[in-house]
Image (tube, rainbow, N blue to C red; front, side, top):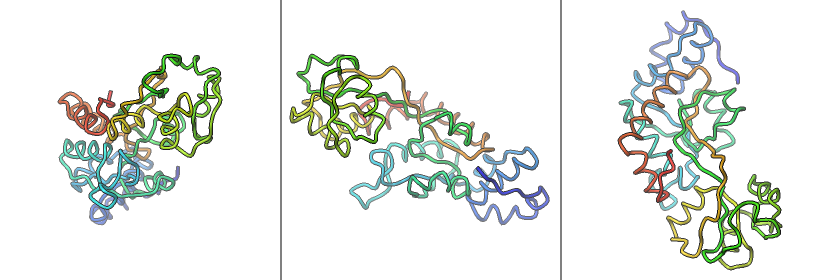
Length: 274
C-alpha cells in the first residue's frame, strides 16, 4: 500500500487546506504524518472536520443499499456506521464506491474508513488497520423443514446441494461429499431447496437470516453450521490506529447499550453483532 510522503513543515503550512478538504485530505495527512514523524492524526482530523467519511457500496442489500432502489441509503452497515459517528460526536458522510475500487479509495484518502462487511483476514490485517468486529457469521446448511437426514456437514455425503461454483461454499459442500448442482447465486439455490429439487444449500448465515426476515422462510431451517465464524469490521488505512481504536470504543458502547442488537434485529431478526 503506497502512501504520500510529506514533511512536517509542509503539513503545518497546509493544515488549513487539509481541513478544508475534509476526510480525503485528512486521511492523506494522517498517513503522511505517520510515516514521517510517527504521529497518528487520523482521529483528530475527523474530530476537527466534524465528519466521518465512510466508503460503502450502496448496492449490497441488506448491508448498504438504497430503499426501494432509489430511496435513501440504508442498511445494517449504514446504520451501524451512523451510530458510530454519533458516538464520536461527528456527522456520517457516505461515499458510494464499487467494491473493486473501495480499498484503493481508502488508500487514496477519499474516505476515513470502509463499512461494507469487510472480513478480517491475515492478508488484510497486514495492509490495513481494523476496528473490533461488528458482525459475526457462520456457514450454514439450509434444508426443508421436514428434512431429518441432514444434521451435520458429514451427513452431506451423497446428498445434492445447490451452489455457485465460484463460492467458498461450493468448496465446503464438495469437501463434505455432496454432489453440487450449479446455480448463479442464493436466489436460485434456495428456490431449488424449497422446490425439493436438491437436498440442501450451503451459504452464509447472514444471507439466510436476511431471506427469512424478508420472506418468513417457513418451509426452511438451518440443519447445521460451521464452528468457525467470519468477522467483519471497519477498515482503515495503515497509520489510522487512533481512529480505529476510537471506533472500537464506540462499538463497545453501542453493544453495551443494546444499539447494535437492535440494528441487527431490524435486518436479520437476530443479533449478529456478537
